[in-house]
Image (cartoon, rainbow, N blue to C red; front, side, top):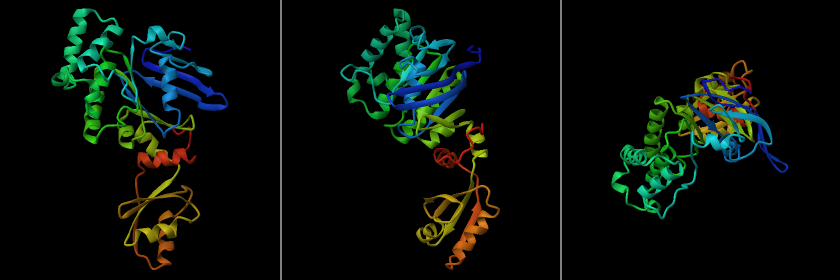
Length: 316
């Protein structure tokens, strides 16, 4: 397997078993350099296990992978100086100060002393940690810990950054700022692989894969995924939302019903010739006047369809 210059990660048939359980099932990947690629999936879908194999921390049970032109796990030692890895849990030393943590990481990566001093100063300023440099890491807020963890992961200026659900413990404003930083890193040439279970974060990725039970159920850009969903999506606005939901939930061809405030978002079999007419007729039998319109699928709709087996697996 040869990795082309424009590809950061290429995997073929990547599989990992733990005893009788298959955690990652025959995954194929081709991720371009200088892009943000997302893994979207529920807990236990295989996101973290895949990342650990690509980092060289786990040996695949089957299949092969190259990361930045290096085979993993065989060349993992050479790879570790080219990648950064930020885990879901804060993994730095809580008893050390912000500056001491960065100093320690810089020594691990054997940065020359002049470069070490320069990089730590740069990152303290970039991630607004200067005033916190003497504070113990364990006393930081969730957002501050996140910024420190990202600073540590990028201290040695890696070509590729692995982020395993990095925003699960921070507030929405911190998440927004974090993603702005990711786009800046990507614009400077860093490739980023990020796992998430947030739909709004998945929409920010240049491309993504939806994982479920260890397998890729769908992949492509957010727009490609939305365009090729194997379902019709309809919205209903009614004066009695709960009653409307009860009336349509059991209809043949209705795949799912989700309430969004006073609206219902309904996914239906795409082969139905008149989905709006079907729903309208059902509600009118109970003298319910409702506004029913076809609507554009969202990434959340794609996720629901993909993880319930309704998505065309070869869509993208």
